[in-house]
Image 1: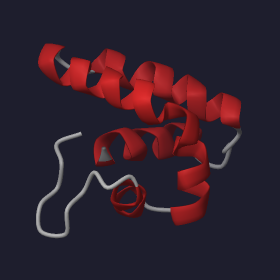
Image 2: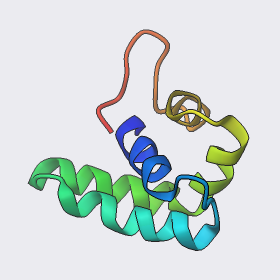
Image 3: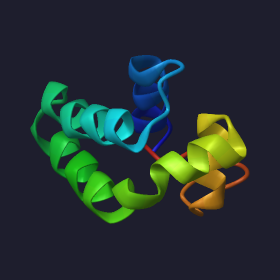
Image 4: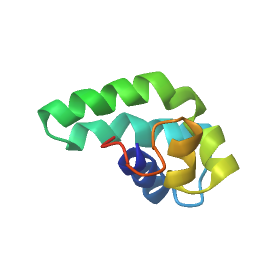
Length: 79
């Protein structure tokens, strides 16, 4: 989760339009190896539509992933 959100934030920088976020989400999984790529694709398919809103609201990858309940307090999810 944090990798995907960090990648999107780095790619879009200050252009936090829905189109820029969706374009970054469309690219992030293509650079990952097989088994991780599948997890990434599932993550993007599931959460893609709300990620832009969450980035604006929470600001950090950690906070976005906690809001999605994908990062536990003591352990982080791989994607």
